[in-house]
Image (cartoon, rainbow, N blue to C red):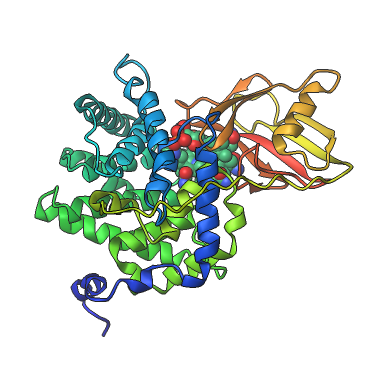
Length: 423
Ligand code: B12
């Protein structure tokens, strides 16, 4: 017979924590990645992103002056951004990340009361949305971040708000676009926080503990032979769960996933992806923000500039296809053309080149996000957040890309499909 469940859940707490850290041999590569993120954080032309600040704070080495300046820029952006109008859609996730950032400062900063109130209000909006439409107004990812941030600040939320997440997890409703790992992980972190910090009654706490355990089991089960869980960008989130629950000490998937990250560090080339991978490379989860050790911090990290992309002479041709399989579209294939571009062109460059081709048939719009430009409109068709439409990017015939339009560089002869999809 296997170990009883109680023992299995207690086991991580009884074992030493050392094996949850990445192998010592990888320290140089991890340090270089931290230094590169620091370089990007020092660029005043980039909007400050609380996830970047969190990654800087959860690192082993620091540049206190740069971190302080970054925090000031964040405060400028966030302190005045809320409370203007309750009519606008909730900003659950961004506000949650900012509040996590304040708690990760040494010593932790108390957010203005109104910000906590706004986050609670956004969560309630999301909760009401999930009752009416079967999903939060934002997403379960942001809803999970909201619960996590309030928990890290020791603020209670109504049991119903938490139960909504439990129900969604039980019914497998956390996913969208095929990959559920990121969202399931954020939700499991929120569960673990609530349970550990005793912010819910003992009955609910036991359920949350089991649910977090189940989430990490699911993640281990979905691990591929290459160690990746979901895809390379969701793997750090799975590792956060193993770290937060202590299962990193017993779960073989942890070491394999960590090895996969270390083998693929070059995939993390944008500030947003670096910010998501660095905490686990330093052995931390967002739960550690609740108990930051504010001692002397080594002032030893210096910013590193990103290496420019190698020049590749010549041109390439990319086939650009626009599809609308939704019932209200008059045609499935709305656009199909070969677009000549320079050899190093990104998909964004391809879209710009297509828009300049005669006759001027192709049009598109993007919206700036911390992840880069998000494609919002193609050929005048807007993907509507309230209808949960989005412009999905695929490599023909049917493989969704794992990166956005500014980061993906199609090969010569590739076919890229922009497909209006539902999530
Ligand atoms: C929810 C989500 C979506 C939703 C967003 C809609 C919504 N209203 O929430 C939908 C389904 C539309 C979506 C689409 C895509 N996504 Co997405 N998404 C996420 C997820 C799970 C959470 C994002 C979030 O809410 N963050 C919290 C808030 C506070 O931060 P935010 O910066 O304000 O979030 C906004 C932007 O991030 C934007 N967004 C979401 N995904 C992406 C992807 C890119 C490339 C960009 C530029 C923006 C963007 O929508 C968010 C909500 O408004 C993340 C997971 C993660 N680990 O980050 C993946 C994630 C960011 N997405 C990813 C990808 C690849 C995509 C797509 C390119 C997939 C595709 N092949 O079409 C498309 C974007 C295409 C486009 N039109 O430009 C990757 C990005 C990896 C990378 N290399 O940067 C992630 C990390 C998932 C993963 N593990 O692969 N996504």
